[in-house]
Each structure stands twice: as C-alpha cells, then as structure tokens.
Image (cartoon, rainbow, N blue to C red):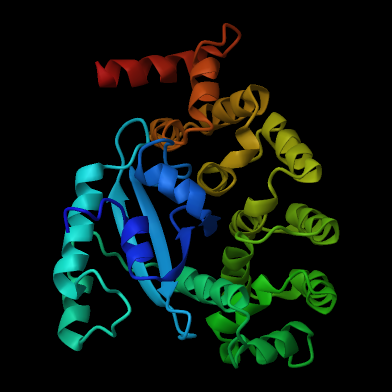
Length: 340
C-alpha cells in the first residue's frame, strides 16, 4: 500500500478506465491531468464547496459496461489544496476493503465497508440522476426508459397537469440532450407552462449544460414574468452558460437595479460564480448583497466565494476598492473584526 500515493495511481494499477467529476456546486468533469495535479497539490481544487472537494469517480474495466461509482468528500485547506492525510486515509480504506485490484466485484460486506468510510457521501437525487445521464452519454449507452416519456410530456401532448408520471431520471436525460433540435424547441415552447414540480428538477439538471442562444433568450424572456421562486430556478438553469454575453448583460442590469433577493443572490454565488470573473461585476454583486440587508448574508457569501481560487484575488481587490459604499465598508470591517 505504501507505493500507492494517489487515487489516480490506484485506478491505474487496477487497469481501470475512469472519469472524475466535481459534484459540489454543479456537475463538472475534471480532466485526468487536472485531477493528478490536484492530488499532488500542484493546483488548488477549482470548485470547492463548504471547504471540501465533492468528487464522483466512475471507473470500470474495458470488458465491463457498468461503471462503479465512488462519492468522495475530501477536506481542503485555506488555499484550496487537497488534504493529503485525508486522501491517503481514503486510499488505505479502499485497499483494506478491496486490495489494490479494483477489477473484482466487491462482496456485500465489502460494499458496506466502503460506504461506511468517513469520506463517503450520498449526493442529492437530482445530482445522481444528472450524473447517470452524463455517464450514459459519455459511455455511448442508451438513456433510461423514462427519457421518451419526458419528451412526450414536454411536447405538451399529455397536458401540463400530468407531471406525476414524469420521472426525475427522464428529466435529467432530457436536459443532457437539450442540444438536440427537437428537445430545444420543445423546451422553449414548454418553459412558461411548466409546473414547479417539473421546472425545479429540469432547471437543476440544466445547470450542468451549456445552453444555446435560443434557449438562453427563452429563459431571459420568461424571467421578468416569473415570481421570485421561479426566478431562482431560472438562474440555476443559466449556471453553465453564465459567461455568455447575454447572461452577463442580464445579470449586470439586474445588479445595477438591485433586483435580486437573498435566495437569488445565494444562487448566483453558488451556481453562477463564474460570471464574477471581473472585479466590476463582482463589486456590483457585493453592493447588492449588502443592500439586501439580511443578517449574516454577506459573511456567508463572502466565505463561499473567497474559497474559489479564480474569484479570491478579485474579491480581495474589491475589498480594497476606495469607491465602495459605506455599507459595504462596514460589512468588510465586520469580517476582519470577527476574524481578529
């Protein structure tokens, strides 16, 4: 076991094919090269959530079509670097349970041992469904039997009140195939009619997909007509498209108008953080959070964003901005006071 230094090495020794995904903020594939750099602390974890790396590791043998899945939650230090001791402990647990050969099917007892380890976590149902859809497409396998029924429902043929028969997995499959012309057209036509019971899981699945201009325009056109709850879901659906010029312009205008509430601001920080890759927009956002005037909101959002390596330097730049409002300066001062 002493010779196995990383999870990547453990998978390689077992001659496994594998894919690594971050599933903390949303579901993003991590390249093998980046994962190895993360494991060797050559780069910080790019998308930390609550001080941890939330990983889904899918691996399989060439002769097998069904991947195994590990859901691993590993702590990060204040710089976003992987806690090496925790990672090594995780490897030790795996080796103790399975040995260094991951190609064997684990017994029921071994499965229980693996799931009982302190680094295992169970993702939310909608994330499991989205990950399953992405893996099916990645491995060129058929999507679930629920996909076709979801397409039928979103065509409007069944009636919008017939949502009880639409499965979460079918919705996730549909979202993963949103780039198909028929699916995109159905989504655009259906969007204003969807009940919350379908809209919420659909937007949660779409947060992992880069949307077309037409789909983005449909969401932005619906947004002003929606209530505050639906607006929050629509923001989620734009997460992987938040760096599109239309979305940037929309968010900038909304921040200038200070039209976001607390839940929407939390959604922006947690899902659409990539839109704040310039200090001007980030400054507007910080001022908006302060203007919401909800106790603890600024500190919570600051703590979340400062952990993101790409945002941290811009956040510190905003803190030093001489033209910040008195209210923002007061919140920043309170942060330093609380940490002193």
